[in-house]
Image 1 (cartoon, rainbow, N blue to C red):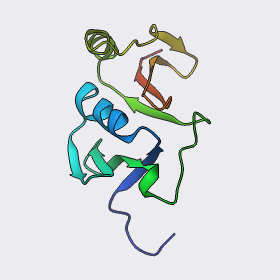
Image 2 (image 1 turned 60 degrees about the vertical axis):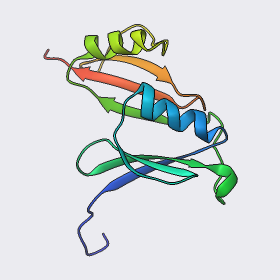
Image 3 (image 1 turned 45 degrees about the vertical axis):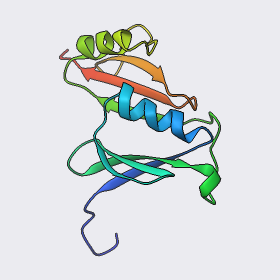
Image 4 (image 1 turned 90 degrees about the horizontal axis):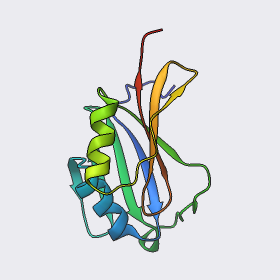
Length: 123
């Protein structure tokens, strides 16, 4: 594609309520911070993937305002993930079964972005 190796991949969410949204990912979801400044924070999801939260007031890119964004995170234990979300008051949906051989539940961050947590299962 670019005739060079991609080292990391990063999804950036532009937010109207940056502080509250950054706090949600940092303190409620417990994602480790790779970099932060006063308007941008980058979280590590895996060794090569990142999720960033940017303040739209400090950027030329604006929030999509609840228009079709889903962050999908595969977890190793869906029950523990949901129990933790409940304990933190994050109001997760019930776990349901999806046709692609997975258990799934959803959370919504302060901006309304949907966070899908899922675990695959054997048929």
